Image (cartoon, rainbow, N blue to C red; front, side):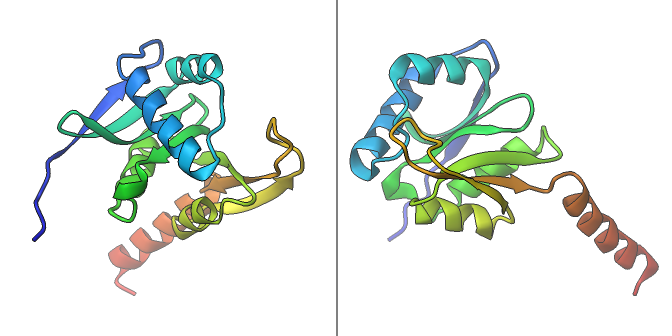
Length: 165
């Protein structure tokens, strides 16, 4: 039996960190389990506070968040492992897209779940960066809708629907 749970979106604007402790705890839970999101606390809190943070809560439980810089770069995107596959990651990316024409991020080259998630949403791999992470791990730099491709798709779609092709 599925229990419908109300998911509430909250935002920490740049300069604020009201939910930073919740975000840190979720990030650490994922790090311990999956060996990703390895940032140290001082770095994480500083980056979180500078970004616009979109958070999804079920009651008092944080189930996912995305920290996005002013230039549309996603610093952190995290969804509780037990809540994946429920559309939360997609909701967070959609929230970020409301503020930006394009989004970009890095994903660990070995993190196949993250890479397939981003590619499924239409992100394209721009390049591989060797030794990107502090521990020497490689990353892919990904981008969604570098302005033109996304706009062009939407423009064509609207043109077709208006012209009635």
